[in-house]
Length: 575
Image (cartoon, rainbow, N blue to C red; front, side, top):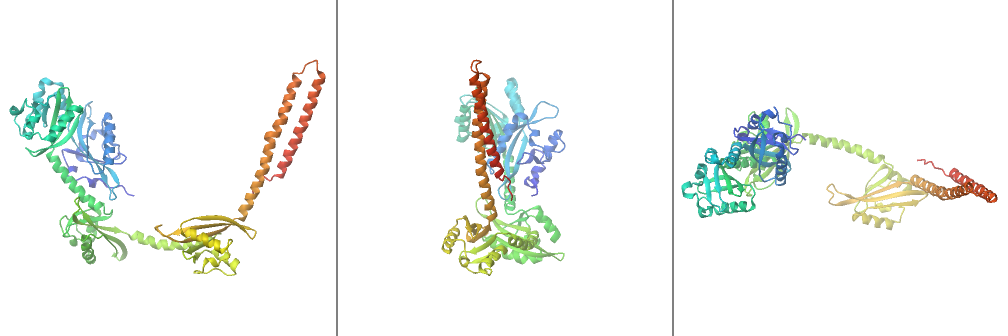
């Protein structure tokens, strides 16, 4: 399957942005797309990021944070996950601080394709924060220089310090609020939700980042809160423009999702009045080939359809608007050559469930049609294989009538009946190894879903009988029985031969493991007695030697017996 074109998931204004970074990675974390802003800012890492691991541009200490963010993103495909990451600066030990938003890219089947990452440089704000913490004597100047709003709350939530940006965002004058408790200003810039979040952060003593809507200025802000023993230090960034752009991205994603969730070929999203809302690259190329002009948003789809397609469109488009899914096959002649297409119409609804238009998909199925012809040819080959097996094979319907049988089955019935059984004849008319009543009982169990396999000795031959249910193409219903008979006489003969050999080998093994060991043990013990005999008992020594000779004769006799047994055992297996 061809790799997806990840670039189509990135809106044009992000691609050409001079503010925002945009990258797309696949599920393996490999760069598949970077925008011009990202390439220009980090070109010292390499002239081409595509194909490299996205970790090359991330501070090593932030690798784990980045991986956890990706995991969270993939676990919640519909959610945008924010994260702060450090990136390297050429020739310096410092790093660029950046804020990113990760979101999962999904294909038409809701299967994750990769991760879209939109970010921007927040190094200035981060540096300002550090200067504010390290250089207390310059804090007022620094805070006024930064582009973010600044708020410092004491341990009792009293307002100790703000900057001009904060005054503009909250529409408050510092001389009216410095020294006052933030809860006293509820309804005047500080809403209940914001006050609750600030109190929780102070109690938990954990850095937090969250978004808040400021009613007085009607601004969306991103608030970063640093708790300390001295209170809370807050940096407030105006993200109203980002919210607007994000909404634009989400709208574009919804349109793209509507198209690409429908099919993977030539796709168009058509509005309720027949106007073109969106289209993919293949659809535009098709229009250029067939009509000589590119598709344009807002134009009527009928202006771009071939003349011989208009009637079908006018018939099926209203049906899709009524909520029906329509799929038809269409034969076209391209330069005199017949060519098959599949045209589908799908109703498309927005997040609220309202009908927003129709997705039209045009799919090239010419290869599939040609394959169908090849399959017919292959069917003949399968039949040849079916008839070449030595097993007698019958296919019976649920009434136990013969629907099909192979060549071996016909020869078997010919030898037993004097004629081959014909299609439609009852299988119970066949002389079976078991009684007809027993066979009928077996077949009834198979039709109920059981599988039966047994072996039977009849007329000096062994037979293996296998009965299995046959299902339809969707395996939802049993449509008959597969009945297979196989002559296994040779296999049985070999089994009997092997069993006899095994018995003889067991006997030989017993003699070797028990008989030989006994005589050898006795001889060794007697030899030890001879070696250690007393000089005063020569008669005893001679008795030991006589006993050794006797045990040796016993041992020799047993060895002759083992050799005799082995000579009678045919240890070769002939297939």
